Image: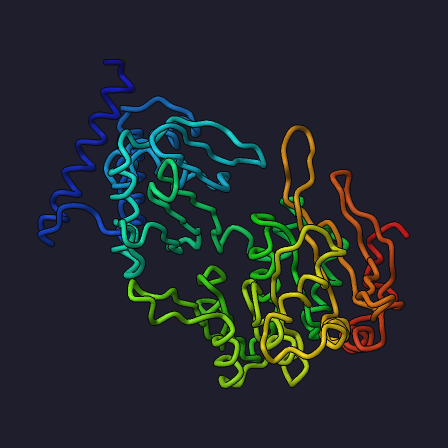
Length: 427
């Protein structure tokens, strides 16, 4: 054994000893989900003590790697802990026992498979599910989605229907991007757009955030919602509670959907939750993702005393965003004629923020690709008036807030000077 290997074994033994002492007081066999932070700090403290006494001669990066390895060795996470402790990892994909990838900095990177048998993978999901008090994974319920304590989303699928069994963890740490300036630093937004977005939230524009899967829609909505004044009541509606705003906003209620049980009963859909939200006296409603007939209910809410509401929708391009929202609204049995729904969409949504991936230097970076206002109908289609266009090369201003339709323009003018809102861009 090398000196480093001996030091690592000594550290692991000390951590296991302290863990055994703690678990012995509880008559438990392994750490609980809520113990992760405590165990992580315990490992860090012992690593620091070992270094202080001269047992480790390592630089900062090597110490961090040692910390993560020991932590992974003493928790049910196993080697997976190293990736989940890395703030730069955006996603972890475990394809059974044959392959594992992490997405870091927009690049997909192969890493050693953390588990040698699929049962260990299932046990990991059970550990999370038990700790979170919800969700199950077995042959009668072969898929499950869980929101982890840090805001990340875990999806697991057994074989069959998945081949092989798979676990995907998409990182949504709520603390990573606290404000718009953090998104600017990450290259997601241009700094010159920040004053405009602040004014859009404060002025209570109805905002639609659109884009493909994993493009940062939830992150952007969460940051925008933090700009809502504290005296306003917010109700969020989601399939799975990823936004976590009820922990942060002074007057916020989170409503979460529920799947049917094994008997096909007990499901709670987003459309019902939007209706329930309206009964809670909200100033604004935030729908994590519009997927169906609830689109019509949300449009009605935006038009009946809840301006400044936000939602996300999947779309392939800025041009497809509003027609897709219209198609979803038409799934409601109460929907009027298609042309009436289109007209309501065009008169209700004020601002569309389209996010996606921009390829640069061999990686795909999440970023805002378009900020547009809705300027009525033209030829039976909603007319989009682009204000800012983005690409891998950067952003450019292509429109002016002063030329926006009157409803949106008046909302912005009440809280900001339209003539200077996008001054940071080259005209």
